[in-house]
Image (cartoon, rainbow, N blue to C red; front, top):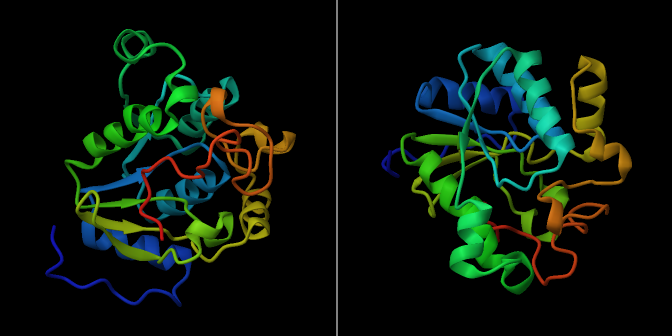
Length: 221
């Protein structure tokens, strides 16, 4: 779906209202990204109340934390959903083509193989998608809009929690008794792959040894 229909002004709308808009406009050609960080729990809870038939997907890099895979299982059971899976090049294939430990030598290429390319595959059959990006996660995300045109993937994207604080997310999780990734309790504010994620505030623990804080799947300023 192209830009013929302009983005609505939903900056003063609640997260539930943003999700409701996306469901009304795009469902069933709407995908909800599940990273199994705490924002995923909030969005899954909200959208399944709007429509139990919401569609979810995840990017399985093959090197997620065991706790992340456990959260994935818990989320499917708790919300009674099935999360579709998209994967990039396998570890064995990546090593054969690019050599071992590509994430050390070229983290951008590793992210492109494991996340950017699979995301493109996931979004090729829908007209809109939903992410858990928040403005206070990093300086590069401060201008995130609640609904925006994703020029990289050529479809609409919603960030319903864009104006939420970390406290807002936790308050919602506690109030609703939602499952969440236990790595958050161990100092991991942001959770990615095992080989490039360490404990840290905001996104400080992501690619801590590299000069990057985005994998490339989100269009950021």
